[in-house]
Image (cartoon, rainbow, N blue to C red):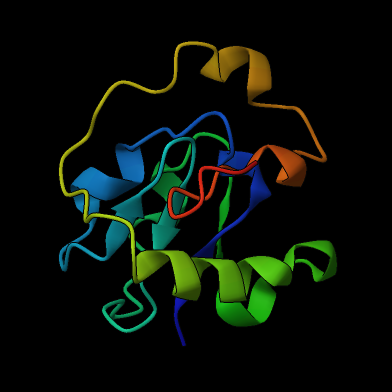
Amino acid sequence: MTFVVTEACIKCKYTDCVSVCPVDCFHEGPNFLVINPEGCIDCGVCIPECPVSAIFEEDRVPEDQKQFIEINARLAQSWPTINEAKEPMDDAEAWADVKGKSQYLIDACTDKA
């Protein structure tokens, strides 16, 4: 099993989770983070670090967020690894509680939202 970053991370990109990951399995895109399922060791230390509760065990991803299992796996293949915390996006606080943000995900491969 792996862990999955879901919609709540979009336009926030808090990186508290990155700094605790013992295997550097997080990857960074323009406005979202993903977890590489191939590298994740299922330790779970990232879950309590996420201030917007965007990370779930794969078998506990909410039904309306299941597409993020595939999104994490796909984007982890092309986005660079991030292993140190950075400042969140400038307007992260304004987006932290917003629901329905999937349309704002920027895929760095195509630069399309």
